[in-house]
Length: 377
Image (cartoon, rainbow, N blue to C red):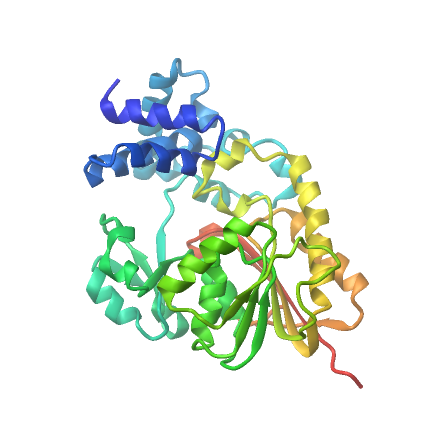
């Protein structure tokens, strides 16, 4: 087996106990002497293995499967219309997906493509960053002028611009959530499921580092990583506090806006994270939907009259999207749907619920719903 295929096989073996992206980082870290093009090829082989899993199970041993997956990826790049829809429906995703997702040929094809790499420059600095990094294309005009697709081969995490805090690696649909929130300088916001802070850093940038953002998560290690990332990005207008998602809130503060970027099944990320297609199950979706309903109901209590409540998930299942929003509509009579302008320009008119499909937004699949708390009469 060639050296790169052998290292790819090491990743596959390690991924039996952890997500494939973590296993990949682990193996590449142990082989830092690899030139960038070899590291990139190993990544491509690994993700092709999971992307084409439904086609290669009978291909023989692991080496044969890896080589077959690589060949299928090259073939698909040359002729994306060469696979019949029935074959895509049967092999590209697990069978349970058809119960929960509005499966289309365009979506299935998008899952078999390599994802784009999106960057978010500091507010107003997109053009300058594009000149610095090169190999960049702007996503559009207006706010999207600071959203760049990187098409080069440099390891951006080693770049001077990254360490200076000039940009974040952030998917375009995740950036759309920040633009939809549209926080103003001086406002008070709560990122209720902040994780390691990708969306919080965007909110801080939009707020020009003014006002205050509360950041919470149930995992303390994520908040520690947020602190490190915020320091590099020079985002200082936030305060971190743990929250387990229960009825006891981390603060009595009432907010101008609350973002609930809830934990989800991640179906919208399956183009970028194909390993998860084969580890996520239908019962995971049901369990997460119940968690999302509770999170949204508890976090809503912190929205001040006239304030915004934004719900987002990087998934496309009905149980975690419209079903959650419908449940909230029934329970929260003091909230009303808030029409949002689509910052990506896919929708022609404002809507209180937005679906971002990978084949349309050029990034991860995402669902966003918004409400405003009714003002006291």
